[in-house]
Image (cartoon, rainbow, N blue to C red; front, side, top):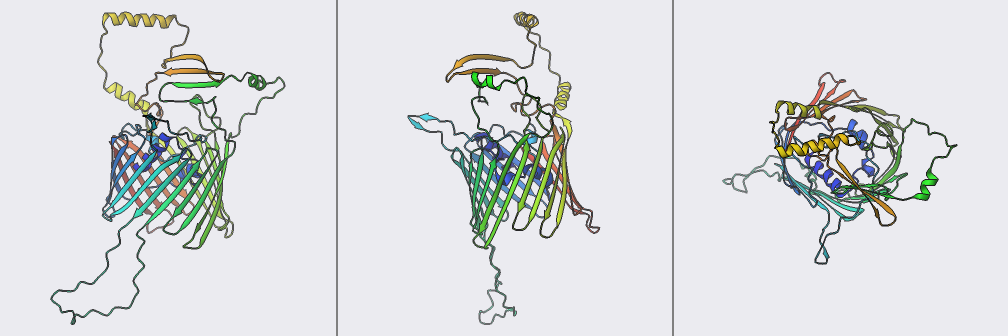
Length: 504
């Protein structure tokens, strides 16, 4: 289950239009959701609250093996209206799942707000802090967007120094006659660092992205880059969805339409195969304190995701290839969605120098009751009272029904009104007003076929099996995980964990 802080961060990126997947560090995100999912290691309880759309609090308690806790505070510049209670939130947004992300877009600038001849819209930012108890470790994150395509991050960790181990002396014993047992002269251990600061600068243009990092603890500098082949910027022919009605802007390419018409001798395109896009990237890092150097490269292929108006052009599939030339490690992963509720992934890694290899197989299966069936049960169990309309209301309803019967247009649930007018720059503007209400107030993000539970499984080459079940039970989000080792007879069960989250 995704933590509450990560859930807020992803919704913040979505609110400001930032591409969270267009980074080299996220090149294996689709396969990692099926092969590297995190399991709860103990009994964890997390409570979260959203007093306002821009301020959030969270309290976590870890009961086993020892009692630990934390307090979190998050504030953002953009109101996040999608953050709601756990009983009505989109379940697919709070779990790590297999996804095929759409092509990245170039981040747009924030809308200008003028007051008294000055711009007062401010800058996008997110502030996060967490206090760990009883260790009193303090961690935090601050992110802000400097330009439309440039974003800065500052993460820190502060931990108090451990108490010095001094031998207590009784106040009644004279200092000159105090005897201490003989101890070997062992040099004191090196104290742990008081904390760490990580600086990160992300540059995203849609076609390519760069990430520049610096860690103060070990003096490490890092550079990452990702390039998307075949990327095309958004033009006037794309659909622009605003807060109000949707506006479709289409240019009149009369000459282009004549040239794009199909020729008589043109052959039909062969169906089948995977249609998608390629991405390539790499990273270089250097540690001044440890005198170490590293490099890696990666290649990714992902299919075109499903469009809102029809099925996807190809089955949702992702292929990744990573290679580290210094240590000779080569890893390849293949992930695909074989049905609407089942996704599978395999990963094979080998060291070209020592020929050591590893194989991992994982998948997810969406189970549980469908959302549409669950709402239908609620409607049957709680019927609404029958209200008889007034006489004038009956006349109006009868007139509307007679008009619908006489109309040749098929009756649909969506009521739309189209407005066509000539716009500037030789463009034709179509304004479509849609009044389709959503089932649960989430702007149509959920469909009646969405499930409220998912079962994940992973099998590694060393016969380690991991099972994770995540579901929405009543008003809580529950995760149950178990890790077993079939090769060990003394300890076949490594760990069992339970995590419960409640958002209000």
